[in-house]
Image (cartoon, rainbow, N blue to C red):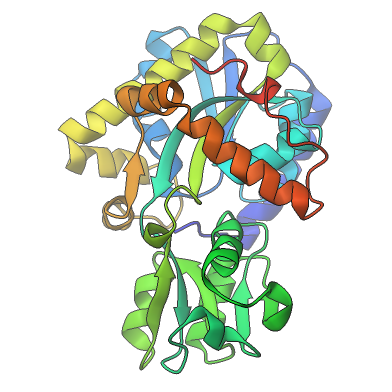
Length: 321
């Protein structure tokens, strides 16, 4: 359901340019958070609408920014103090010089992302010579490459991979019969399986746990100068997750309210295939060391592919608690 609206992208690029010119805000309690249209981030709208930020003295602005290519510059400049995106892009941003630090994990995909194929493709090896549409900038690219390495004899070079630059477009290409397979998520995932004869999810993110996780990062300088704001934003997220567990129907309405063309029903459907991480889940991730282990695997993977300048994540986790 990470829909990308082209008109909104243009607006967001213009906003990014405006932020770059404005520089640091005059008050540390005036805070901006950015993320794209995705259910995993939407509990932040619960926090906003329920007053969790304002109760802590934070004037929070949430900016929906679909063009994730701007995230590195925005977080490094500090014009957007908080960015939510998938863990492996967050790691790549940090490893390639972004001035960012990990705060907490927001959610993990448990079947919300899938490789959907035509009926004749019954294994990953059957993708040889086939045309596959995906978005290489999306977190599901790591999920797909991990699956290839673990459970097939193929490499990406054995497949005709079309980088659509947009997952929604990849799904639409599959439904139009233009490709043999596509990486997609909701709502295109369900639509494709229902509308295309023989279409099926060959693998999903549930088959490869922890390959698609979302996390919140913060500008390093801002965090060190405003630790109380960072703590309050973290607390607001945990309160939002508690609210969602206790009041799901109201929560879905609040979560949908911040996005265009997204309904409470869309949010509910996505949430069934996501695991949201609150206070206890994050404490377990840190105490067990699993979040660092998972992240190290991601950093090593992209380092080996030449897409990271470093795989040393020591500083990346220095604010995690």
